[in-house]
Image 1 (spheres, rainbow, N blue to C red):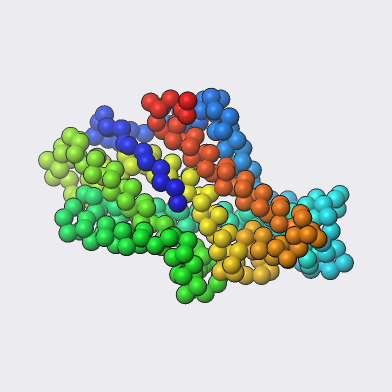
Image 2 (image 1 turned 90 degrees about the vertical axis):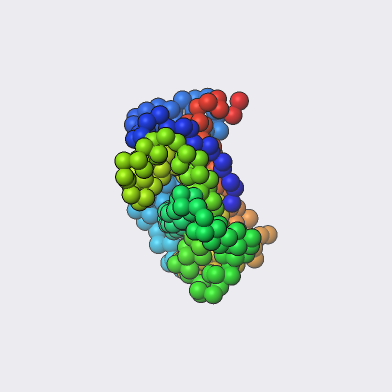
Length: 302
């Protein structure tokens, strides 16, 4: 998990600043114009999202139907990306696998971000014993390599898509708790928070309306970047048999099965691997672009 550090800008007023969607899109478009990598990130991300949302409805082939007469067919007019050892169309399985991969990553990251933001926000604002207990728990979970810990949890829960999502969410939330705690420690010192306290605002109101909304720019950048890493983490668990079970299409499982046909069918593992590369690269570059949009004083990557 790559850590993206974003320092919150000092708020100019008690109310959280809100940028319109139009201004945000224009700023992102300017970032794409300055940096080709940002454009690549937007294009790759859009391609993956479109494939996940609309792809299964556009492709008529059944992703799990077996056709032994068409097994290990090379790419051609009938099968643009070839077939696997059971005669299933690889293009269709990649597109259907995109839906499960993307939806699982979204579920994992947003669940981890929500829970981590709550824990980190309370710990940073309350301090004292609550902060110590919360951060020692975070330190304990982050002491383990996240993928190994996710494997252990997924193995204990049993193989399957639900187990994969739960395992990854458990190992991902501590990083969000630490990020939000650091932001809250800075934000709670500003005058608009002191003013809210002086007016008698409850702790939940101060956190929910005056502090946490200012953490969203940093969280959005982190979430976008982590989506790609969640996809590859889910594929890693599927690669060792802990993810979605056959015959459900999944990129990691397809790459794992392709190991046995490297010499006879080069296309079998190549195209699922390229799909995984496009997804991870797209979300990572989009996250960098959003970081530049949210931090204009950095002046891009230079």
